[in-house]
Length: 173
Image (cartoon, rainbow, N blue to C red):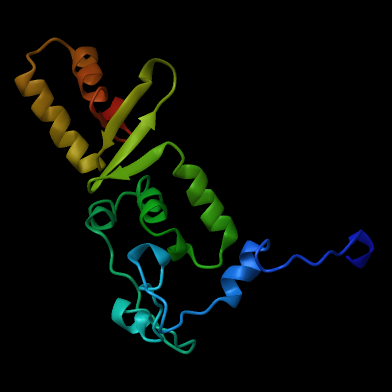
């Protein structure tokens, strides 16, 4: 690094703003104002008040599962997606599993305790549709069929796909 130094010049404290600020100390005879920053302080125990543990030997407990994780726990398709979006660190040091789950989770977001599929492909491209487990999807398909009239399978499926997504929606409707 020393080969890059071209010239060294002394800057007096008045011209050097950084050195000037560091060299000046608050004296008792100087008046303090709210704008000068003298009221802000960092006390040694600020972390204790915020609940931050500075112990390198501390053992953290496992985070509890979220309601969304509980809802999709037995769903093979959505379980890893929800787990990755809620707590990516839960995959531990297995980089391959984390990468696979991250790839699966592309196109999904969590908002307001719901899992949403964003985008879509081709004719199924919609801004955002709610993801539901297959059990709930079957119940929603049955309800849509009853309340929507008997206009056929395709009409019912199209109406459902505007609002909901689950992996076997084609087979269930």
